[in-house]
Structures are given as structure tokens and as C-alpha cells.
Image (cartoon, rainbow, N blue to C red):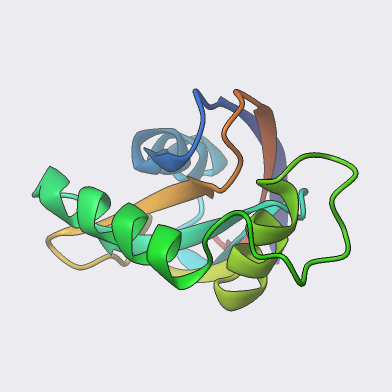
Length: 140
């Protein structure tokens, strides 16, 4: 068994979905692993990771709109408000999604569907620099 690890830094410009599938594919190619499991883990509590369609930008628009309606800012019952009105809603959105994704590697490639991409889902309004740790374990 061999292992490889790296940390990607993804700069965001506020709320939205930021695809990083090409960087993930480069990491897998450089690791020269033919069969294994790639784990992507985001090191933050106010953003998350998604596997989602990457063919039509309307999907990103609709997902952003859905989560804004599901967890709006300004809910008067929230207690955690020291970091701004978007912070606790961001934590709730992250809790409803995921911070870690496992992706099988077969024949040296991430096994993704035709229209699937890997996204960082930024839940805060301000720009951030987010870290996604990639860890691959497998065989050559």
C-alpha cells in the first residue's frame, strides 16, 4: 500500500460553489495510484464539500438559492452571532452537508459520473482561503 497527501488552498469570493475537480485529478495522476480510495476533507466549519453536477451552472444557482431559503440570515433565535449574521447560518449549512468525501480510484482515475464535479461550498459572504486536505491510499 502506498499513501499520498496534499493540501489544496481554495480562494473564495463569498458564498457559492467552487469546483476543484481538475486539481483533484492532478493530485491523483501525480500519486501514480491505480486502485485506491481518495479522501477529501475540508478543514473549516463554515464551508463544506459536495459532489454535484458540473455541466450546467443553473445547478449551482439553484443550490445557492435553496440553502439561502433553508437557512436564512437574521433568524432572531440564533445565539452565536459574534462573527456576524452569516456565521451561524454557515455552520448550520455545513452541518447539513459534509466536510469529508470518499472517492474511489480505479485505473488511476477518480471514479466520477459523467456530469459530476467536486466542489467547495462556501457558506460565508466574505472571501476566504479554504484548505482541503487530500489523502490517497492505494496500490500502483
